[in-house]
Amino acid sequence: MEKTSKIYVAGHNGMVGSAITRRLKQDGFNNLVTRSSAELDLRNQQAVNNFFEKEKPEYVFLAAAKVGGIVANNTYRAEFLYDNLLIESNIIHAAYRQGVKKLLFLGSSCIYPKLAPQPLKEEYLLTGLLEPTNEGYAIAKIAGIKLCEAYRDQYGCNFISVMPTNLYGQGDNYHPQNAHVIPSLLRRFHEAKLNKSSRVTIWGSGSPLREFMYTDDLADACFFLMQQYNDKLFINVGTGEDLTIKELALMIKKVVGFEGNIDFDTSKPDGTPRKLMDSSRLHAMGWKHKTSLEEGLQLAYRFFKEELK
Image: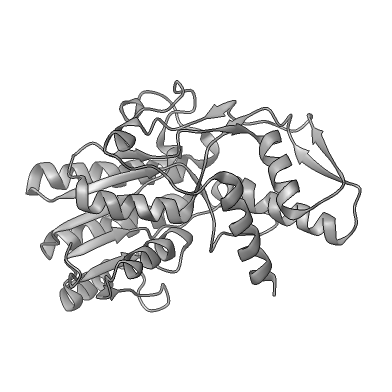
């Protein structure tokens, strides 16, 4: 990529897309093309084709997707599958038709089988059954990976895929019902602190292990991979470090400054005992995340409070 290259960031208003946009601008890449979902419906093939014909981007970061937590994934199963299949198919095909130099597709760690060995290596894809609750989203993301591979095989397109671990940070979703674990806990500890509650109850035993990455670190990895990585096999992007939900809750309690107790409701499900990505291929290329979890949580809490205002 040159500083003058025309770059399309699909999904620039989302948590990941906005982080990628910030990262590009930080390095002086200012020839960015963006469209909000109100301006361009990525599910509409003709509209996407017209956009690519008019703008002719040279590089594409495909971060646009319909996303949500377990409840949303389970409730809107058809939408999660249909919308995501259309978004990625339309953009990948239009990128091929317009001769885009390189495209980076963002997947998700939910593509891996529910019972895959830990840590998750890239070659474990399609070796077992998926987690049923977000199967639609996972299948759409797997289809995106396979589209990139197929367009590379048949047409010689330099389309790569990146699988991030669990993300959090600026632009996260703090909705009480369908937020992910970090924004959900930040919100609950913050409200408990304001209401002077004596305790916060968390679902499950607190023993499952999870890995988290600050969204600006993922953007930095994408920026790095867009310039350095050209392989067919998708690549994991994680920190290589995990911690228990209990340790996470204690860390968030400290960041928020909540003084009360934490109760774990063991009658509620824990989910997968451990979920850690094997990011050794990325680390071997010389890239590592910069933001520690505690530092990232402090930043995320600051953004959350700004959003409340």
